[in-house]
Amino acid sequence: MDLKTYEDFKSLQGGLDITFVESAIIKLLDYLSKNQVSWLEGITLINDLIYLKKHNFSKLSKEPCALILSWIATNYDNSDFIEFLGYEEKEGEEEGEEDCKEKQIVDVLDLTLNTIYHISHNTDVLSFLKQRLQVAKTELETYELKDYITALEEYQKAEIPRLADEILDTVLERVDRYFEQDYEQKKSEHLLCGLRETIVEYKSSYVIAWCIKSEKYTSIHKRTQFIGGGGLFVSKHTDLIQMSGSAPFTDWEEWFELEIDQLELYWRLEITYNKQKITALKALLNCSTANILKLRNEDSKIIFEEGENGCDLKTLKQDLDKSGIENELKKLRRKRS
Image (cartoon, rainbow, N blue to C red; front, side):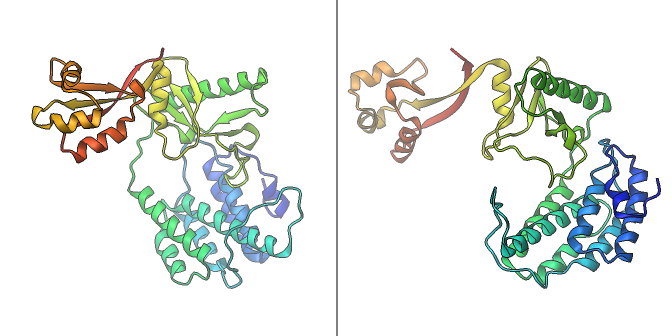
């Protein structure tokens, strides 16, 4: 396909071989330079084109990566960035001039940094980002650059093993069938699909990111976002597939393991009986000596489980610790009732 005009590049469809994407990127960068396309419009086209490649873990080679970084370096211009707290799109309202400017700043930074992520394996993007950080104009730009530098440094250190193609294909097939059934049964308003390159393996499961099927080859910054939706978990040894939430401090792997085996978590506080501490123990438990001795088991432990006698185990543990009474609070699993 001959790529010469803006419409030619916009008409490309997803699922392209990486060699075609690289060739198209080189032609696009030449088009952008000759036509003096703006930073925002240019980075949008570059980012869109990167997302059209097949989901087979292929990556851009050194030449297109270097050319993209060179184009970004040439066009990166923060001279008219304005200081603001953030941009929030107002549904049903027309954007004012200031809101439009704020949105453009957010968009151009997001798209530029995401594009840089996709070339970071083959170019020294960290040096570029650190140079830009030194001359950042606003708090937003400073924050975004610092955050991305940290994220990229962690990403480059991480070694995420790639799963065998047979496993990836099997998981993706199960996931897409699950989404198709949900859509056919009208459980979902949208037909969704899994994203093959996002599959991660855990002990008992796999987790995969997803999107609307028609947006499979759309830039992450243009995909429809779903509030509260997390990764889709797929059991290795059962038919269970379940959507997680998005709460940042929840151990979703553990949550799904519990779902697989129909277990629930509960807390158990084990207090070691010590006759030297019996006075303090009686006060904390509001018990007589006789009752304390009855509570003690054959291992000289006094056991309380979550929900018993309305006792707050975490608070009791804190009080026991202050009194120097040996204890251990354990998180355990049991079959759901």
